Image 1 (cartoon, one colour):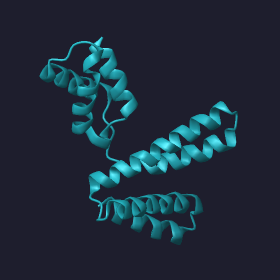
Image 2: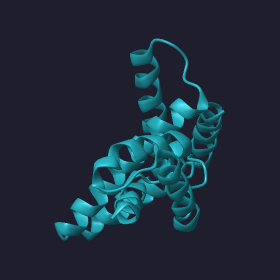
Image 3: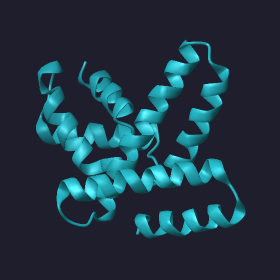
Image 4: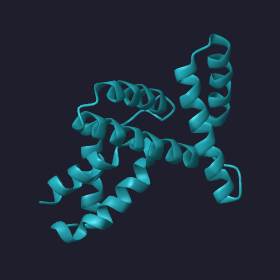
Length: 146
């Protein structure tokens, strides 16, 4: 499970004196603990991956904001946190693989035009879960529906 892996990595980072990695791992464990409390039960791997993916998205957005603000020092910090965070997520699907999944769902739903966007997005995201970036899925669905 991802939570056990994070706990082991926290111990390893503590022993190695890797403060930067330790900080990120502790933050992820904190996010998972908060989600567990909110849910009222233990998190399974798919639920944990959603929490981690959400945290990765926050790091990516912070990195983009720092880049837009001309803060190169913060960009590198956020990039490191983002890279560590995504290492705990399942392999992300490539564009070609996603394109075939989106096409299959469009055919199954008989979707045409932009009105079916929500239906197709819901079906695709239910299948791919945290294995794909939502922005990429959204762009592909829009592209293939038009």
